[in-house]
Length: 272
Image (cartoon, rainbow, N blue to C red; front, side, top):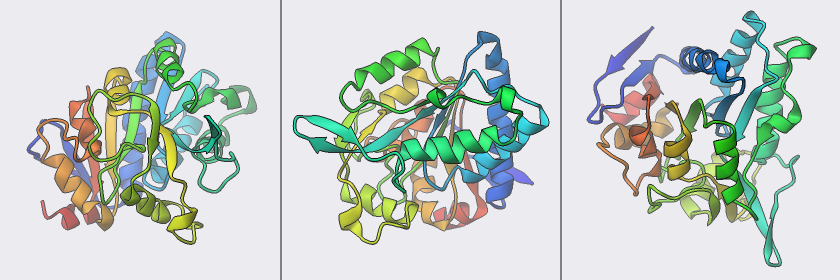
Protein backbone atom coordinates (compact mmCIF):
# COMPACT_ATOMS: atom_id res chain seq x y z
CA UNK A 1 0.00 0.00 0.00
CA UNK A 2 1.16 3.53 -0.74
CA UNK A 3 -0.12 6.98 -0.01
CA UNK A 4 0.40 10.33 -1.62
CA UNK A 5 1.46 13.23 0.58
CA UNK A 6 1.32 16.91 -0.36
CA UNK A 7 4.59 18.81 -0.62
CA UNK A 8 5.52 22.48 -0.78
CA UNK A 9 6.86 21.85 -4.27
CA UNK A 10 4.72 20.70 -7.18
CA UNK A 11 6.56 17.37 -7.22
CA UNK A 12 4.36 14.56 -5.84
CA UNK A 13 5.54 12.43 -2.93
CA UNK A 14 4.62 8.74 -2.79
CA UNK A 15 5.15 6.98 0.56
CA UNK A 16 5.60 3.22 1.01
CA UNK A 17 5.90 1.05 4.10
CA UNK A 18 9.32 -0.33 3.25
CA UNK A 19 12.08 -0.79 0.66
CA UNK A 20 10.52 -3.77 -1.14
CA UNK A 21 7.15 -2.15 -1.88
CA UNK A 22 8.91 1.09 -2.79
CA UNK A 23 11.26 -0.73 -5.17
CA UNK A 24 8.36 -2.52 -6.85
CA UNK A 25 6.58 0.80 -7.45
CA UNK A 26 9.65 2.57 -8.86
CA UNK A 27 10.40 -0.41 -11.09
CA UNK A 28 6.85 -0.40 -12.50
CA UNK A 29 7.00 3.36 -13.11
CA UNK A 30 10.37 2.98 -14.79
CA UNK A 31 9.32 0.07 -16.98
CA UNK A 32 6.22 1.91 -18.20
CA UNK A 33 8.37 4.79 -19.39
CA UNK A 34 10.98 2.53 -20.97
CA UNK A 35 8.29 0.64 -22.86
CA UNK A 36 6.85 3.88 -24.22
CA UNK A 37 10.32 4.97 -25.30
CA UNK A 38 11.14 1.66 -27.00
CA UNK A 39 9.69 2.92 -30.27
CA UNK A 40 12.88 4.99 -30.59
CA UNK A 41 14.86 1.76 -30.77
CA UNK A 42 17.24 2.79 -27.96
CA UNK A 43 16.18 3.17 -24.32
CA UNK A 44 18.20 4.75 -21.53
CA UNK A 45 18.19 4.52 -17.75
CA UNK A 46 20.17 6.95 -15.56
CA UNK A 47 21.46 5.18 -12.45
CA UNK A 48 23.20 5.97 -9.19
CA UNK A 49 25.34 3.39 -7.44
CA UNK A 50 24.97 2.56 -3.76
CA UNK A 51 22.20 1.14 -1.62
CA UNK A 52 19.10 3.27 -2.26
CA UNK A 53 18.11 1.73 -5.60
CA UNK A 54 18.98 -1.94 -4.98
CA UNK A 55 15.37 -3.01 -4.39
CA UNK A 56 14.36 -1.07 -7.50
CA UNK A 57 16.99 -2.79 -9.65
CA UNK A 58 15.93 -6.22 -8.31
CA UNK A 59 12.25 -5.50 -8.95
CA UNK A 60 12.99 -4.17 -12.43
CA UNK A 61 14.91 -7.36 -13.23
CA UNK A 62 11.86 -9.41 -12.19
CA UNK A 63 9.63 -7.35 -14.48
CA UNK A 64 12.07 -7.77 -17.37
CA UNK A 65 11.95 -11.51 -16.83
CA UNK A 66 8.15 -11.62 -16.66
CA UNK A 67 7.91 -9.73 -19.95
CA UNK A 68 10.76 -11.60 -21.66
CA UNK A 69 12.22 -8.14 -22.31
CA UNK A 70 14.86 -7.58 -24.96
CA UNK A 71 17.62 -5.59 -23.26
CA UNK A 72 20.05 -5.39 -26.17
CA UNK A 73 19.19 -1.75 -26.84
CA UNK A 74 18.93 -0.64 -23.21
CA UNK A 75 21.75 1.66 -22.08
CA UNK A 76 22.71 2.23 -18.45
CA UNK A 77 24.01 5.77 -17.83
CA UNK A 78 25.97 5.88 -14.58
CA UNK A 79 26.09 9.22 -12.79
CA UNK A 80 29.67 9.31 -11.54
CA UNK A 81 32.92 7.53 -10.77
CA UNK A 82 35.86 7.99 -8.42
CA UNK A 83 39.07 9.26 -10.03
CA UNK A 84 42.60 10.13 -9.01
CA UNK A 85 45.19 12.45 -10.52
CA UNK A 86 47.94 10.93 -12.67
CA UNK A 87 50.15 13.83 -13.62
CA UNK A 88 48.07 16.23 -15.68
CA UNK A 89 45.38 13.65 -16.39
CA UNK A 90 42.79 11.76 -14.39
CA UNK A 91 42.46 8.00 -14.00
CA UNK A 92 39.42 5.96 -13.01
CA UNK A 93 39.57 3.92 -9.85
CA UNK A 94 39.86 0.19 -10.71
CA UNK A 95 36.58 -1.19 -12.05
CA UNK A 96 36.85 -4.11 -9.61
CA UNK A 97 37.29 -1.84 -6.58
CA UNK A 98 34.50 -2.35 -4.04
CA UNK A 99 33.50 1.31 -4.42
CA UNK A 100 33.65 1.58 -8.23
CA UNK A 101 30.48 3.00 -9.75
CA UNK A 102 31.41 1.43 -13.09
CA UNK A 103 31.76 -1.93 -11.36
CA UNK A 104 28.41 -1.42 -9.63
CA UNK A 105 26.76 -0.61 -12.95
CA UNK A 106 28.05 -3.84 -14.46
CA UNK A 107 27.60 -6.25 -11.55
CA UNK A 108 24.64 -4.86 -9.57
CA UNK A 109 22.64 -3.57 -12.53
CA UNK A 110 23.56 -5.08 -15.92
CA UNK A 111 24.29 -8.59 -14.66
CA UNK A 112 21.21 -8.57 -12.42
CA UNK A 113 19.04 -7.54 -15.36
CA UNK A 114 20.67 -10.06 -17.70
CA UNK A 115 20.16 -12.94 -15.28
CA UNK A 116 16.40 -12.47 -15.67
CA UNK A 117 16.24 -12.77 -19.47
CA UNK A 118 17.38 -15.23 -22.12
CA UNK A 119 20.97 -15.05 -23.41
CA UNK A 120 19.81 -13.72 -26.77
CA UNK A 121 18.11 -10.76 -25.08
CA UNK A 122 20.91 -9.65 -22.77
CA UNK A 123 22.47 -6.20 -22.54
CA UNK A 124 26.07 -6.04 -23.82
CA UNK A 125 28.76 -4.73 -21.48
CA UNK A 126 29.43 -1.72 -23.72
CA UNK A 127 25.92 -0.45 -22.96
CA UNK A 128 27.01 0.59 -19.46
CA UNK A 129 28.42 4.12 -19.63
CA UNK A 130 30.36 6.36 -17.25
CA UNK A 131 31.75 9.86 -17.79
CA UNK A 132 35.35 10.22 -18.94
CA UNK A 133 37.22 12.50 -16.50
CA UNK A 134 39.57 13.63 -19.27
CA UNK A 135 36.78 14.45 -21.73
CA UNK A 136 33.69 15.23 -19.62
CA UNK A 137 31.92 17.14 -22.41
CA UNK A 138 31.83 13.92 -24.41
CA UNK A 139 29.35 12.49 -21.89
CA UNK A 140 26.94 15.30 -22.63
CA UNK A 141 27.38 14.57 -26.35
CA UNK A 142 26.81 10.84 -25.76
CA UNK A 143 23.53 11.54 -24.01
CA UNK A 144 22.47 13.66 -26.97
CA UNK A 145 23.30 10.81 -29.36
CA UNK A 146 21.37 8.34 -27.22
CA UNK A 147 18.33 10.61 -27.41
CA UNK A 148 18.35 11.67 -23.75
CA UNK A 149 17.62 9.66 -20.62
CA UNK A 150 14.17 8.09 -20.49
CA UNK A 151 14.20 7.72 -16.71
CA UNK A 152 16.78 9.22 -14.36
CA UNK A 153 16.75 7.43 -11.00
CA UNK A 154 18.15 9.68 -8.27
CA UNK A 155 19.31 9.46 -4.66
CA UNK A 156 20.31 12.14 -2.16
CA UNK A 157 23.23 12.40 0.20
CA UNK A 158 22.02 12.16 3.78
CA UNK A 159 24.04 14.97 5.32
CA UNK A 160 24.68 17.49 2.53
CA UNK A 161 22.14 16.70 -0.17
CA UNK A 162 24.69 15.81 -2.81
CA UNK A 163 23.31 14.20 -5.95
CA UNK A 164 25.90 12.13 -7.77
CA UNK A 165 29.10 13.91 -6.58
CA UNK A 166 27.71 17.46 -6.80
CA UNK A 167 28.53 19.31 -3.57
CA UNK A 168 26.60 22.05 -1.85
CA UNK A 169 26.85 25.29 -3.81
CA UNK A 170 26.62 23.62 -7.22
CA UNK A 171 24.85 25.79 -9.80
CA UNK A 172 21.81 24.39 -11.59
CA UNK A 173 23.53 24.76 -14.95
CA UNK A 174 26.59 22.69 -14.00
CA UNK A 175 27.25 19.76 -16.34
CA UNK A 176 29.65 16.80 -16.39
CA UNK A 177 33.01 17.60 -14.82
CA UNK A 178 35.62 16.50 -12.26
CA UNK A 179 34.97 17.72 -8.71
CA UNK A 180 36.69 17.56 -5.36
CA UNK A 181 34.48 15.55 -3.04
CA UNK A 182 33.28 17.32 0.07
CA UNK A 183 33.99 15.76 3.47
CA UNK A 184 30.23 15.31 3.94
CA UNK A 185 30.01 13.32 0.70
CA UNK A 186 33.03 11.24 1.62
CA UNK A 187 31.59 10.49 5.06
CA UNK A 188 28.27 9.47 3.48
CA UNK A 189 30.23 7.07 1.29
CA UNK A 190 31.67 5.37 4.36
CA UNK A 191 28.13 4.09 4.89
CA UNK A 192 27.43 3.43 1.22
CA UNK A 193 30.60 1.33 0.89
CA UNK A 194 31.14 -0.33 4.30
CA UNK A 195 34.44 -1.90 3.24
CA UNK A 196 36.04 1.52 3.65
CA UNK A 197 37.68 1.30 7.08
CA UNK A 198 38.04 5.05 7.62
CA UNK A 199 37.72 8.38 5.84
CA UNK A 200 41.32 8.34 4.65
CA UNK A 201 40.49 5.45 2.30
CA UNK A 202 37.68 7.33 0.52
CA UNK A 203 38.92 8.97 -2.72
CA UNK A 204 38.97 12.76 -2.82
CA UNK A 205 37.89 13.35 -6.42
CA UNK A 206 35.22 12.11 -8.78
CA UNK A 207 33.84 12.74 -12.24
CA UNK A 208 30.12 13.45 -12.13
CA UNK A 209 27.15 14.53 -14.15
CA UNK A 210 25.81 17.92 -13.04
CA UNK A 211 22.33 19.12 -12.15
CA UNK A 212 22.20 20.66 -15.61
CA UNK A 213 22.88 17.24 -17.14
CA UNK A 214 19.97 15.73 -15.21
CA UNK A 215 17.48 18.49 -16.03
CA UNK A 216 18.47 18.83 -19.67
CA UNK A 217 18.58 15.17 -20.63
CA UNK A 218 15.95 13.44 -18.47
CA UNK A 219 12.44 12.75 -19.72
CA UNK A 220 11.43 11.54 -16.26
CA UNK A 221 13.11 11.63 -12.85
CA UNK A 222 12.40 9.68 -9.66
CA UNK A 223 14.10 10.60 -6.37
CA UNK A 224 14.30 7.63 -3.98
CA UNK A 225 14.75 8.24 -0.24
CA UNK A 226 15.00 5.20 2.02
CA UNK A 227 15.46 4.96 5.76
CA UNK A 228 15.57 7.29 8.73
CA UNK A 229 18.98 8.62 7.70
CA UNK A 230 17.28 10.29 4.72
CA UNK A 231 14.83 12.26 6.85
CA UNK A 232 16.65 15.57 6.45
CA UNK A 233 17.00 14.98 2.71
CA UNK A 234 13.28 14.29 2.37
CA UNK A 235 12.35 17.37 4.38
CA UNK A 236 14.67 19.63 2.36
CA UNK A 237 13.61 18.30 -1.03
CA UNK A 238 9.88 18.17 -0.33
CA UNK A 239 9.97 21.80 0.82
CA UNK A 240 11.87 23.06 -2.22
CA UNK A 241 9.87 25.21 -4.61
CA UNK A 242 12.82 25.33 -7.03
CA UNK A 243 16.39 24.08 -7.26
CA UNK A 244 18.31 24.89 -4.07
CA UNK A 245 22.05 25.00 -4.68
CA UNK A 246 22.63 24.33 -0.97
CA UNK A 247 20.88 20.95 -1.41
CA UNK A 248 21.71 19.74 -4.94
CA UNK A 249 19.38 16.73 -4.75
CA UNK A 250 16.53 19.24 -4.96
CA UNK A 251 17.25 19.12 -8.71
CA UNK A 252 14.37 16.64 -8.95
CA UNK A 253 11.84 19.48 -8.54
CA UNK A 254 13.27 21.13 -11.67
CA UNK A 255 12.83 17.99 -13.80
CA UNK A 256 10.05 17.01 -16.19
CA UNK A 257 7.73 14.17 -15.10
CA UNK A 258 9.33 14.10 -11.65
CA UNK A 259 8.33 12.44 -8.41
CA UNK A 260 9.72 11.82 -4.95
CA UNK A 261 9.38 8.34 -3.45
CA UNK A 262 10.11 7.59 0.20
CA UNK A 263 9.56 4.90 2.78
CA UNK A 264 7.76 5.34 6.08
CA UNK A 265 11.01 5.52 8.04
CA UNK A 266 12.22 8.49 6.03
CA UNK A 267 8.85 10.23 6.43
CA UNK A 268 8.86 9.73 10.20
CA UNK A 269 12.40 11.08 10.45
CA UNK A 270 11.46 14.06 8.29
CA UNK A 271 8.51 14.83 10.60
CA UNK A 272 6.32 15.73 7.63
